[in-house]
Length: 276
Image (cartoon, helix red, strand yellow):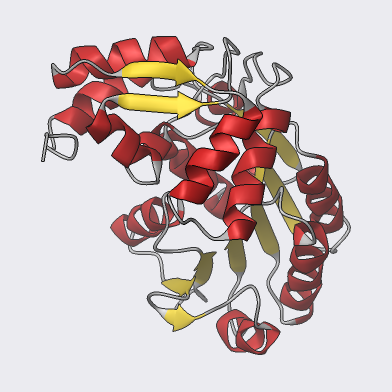
């Protein structure tokens, strides 16, 4: 029996990438992890690592690090998409963001690459509260952000991975742009209430000004480029432009997306938010 060429999952150890890897492996499909921290070495900032990772693959899940909103991200993704197509990859599935001009430029370059493409334009991840810097905020019982009362339809990374896996393996998704969101917009006060109910501990949302937020990040000794990126994301993208719902999960999978309360309950049961 002829073996299928592998699917390359960039960011294959990250929040969405590792879930895509798990789903492909569960279907006995060959998969290659491209990551700085596992699998075949791949570094977005080191183009010399790109061709070895792309050699012989049939499809690529494109997850850019640190974020498609970062300056220069679109050009870098465009270069990767062109090289992937030249190396023989016929399908590209791009993890994108909502309301981000740089992300939309990256989408355009992927569409123009000559490969079969699918774009997943996603809301903020539920898992930012458990698998990223906001986990510490949940543990501390204080989620302090410059988001005011803006609502966001937070999306479960498991839903993103389900849509991405479908797009990587089923021709029906070629040429589709999916707006992937959760089932309802939530404010950060709503999020704090769900987390309080799931953990049994009081967790508050504290609205900050942009200046206060930057000062807190700087005081936590985060790298300056990350401080600037997070400041941009929270003060620009979270301005209400993305409060509306998308129907990407419904269109791609024929089911409703998972809700934040369900995510919070499942995650609390793992103990990851237990008080230290």
